[in-house]
Image (cartoon, rainbow, N blue to C red):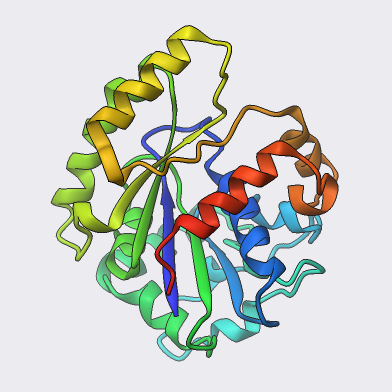
Length: 251
């Protein structure tokens, strides 16, 4: 089983959308029950991309006992993607979950391996932006880390800080398994293009060469609670998601 952590320095970069649509693309040709997404973001919105409704309250944040079984929290979807939502919790419950994660640095990794996914299974973890106990847990078990960023001045300035966090969190994450993905690219925007070129020169082979273009249909797919691959199968952005999936070292 491969575990992919999807991370970002700041909010608003489309990290959750990337997680959902990449999972959906990977699931297109995958065996049943072999692709899963885990939501470690307290916003708890990832499952909406898979038509699982706004009232999905149960989730991993409720389970802080050693004998808990995440299979009880796994929701199947119509898109061949298993969902493990964060859950709708109050402040006290959230703090209890975060305390559990702080006390047990390998909590998430152990629970994922207990799911019983096949050897070629893939789990994508959506994390909240910035440094957190959720990011530390994801990095502790991830085989691949995808940093999602925009090709704008803010991202260009803050990506080095994210790199520093990733390197200083005392997990097994290294620069070799951490790659950069640019989202919401605007080919007609000179500043956008120049920053993308500068980042490509800086990151070399560590930057995924297939950036995701800005496309209103990505947002529309979310509004209809569908992955882009089902909402608009001929969309050009979808082709880029497929190329990203093919590029990732998942064998």
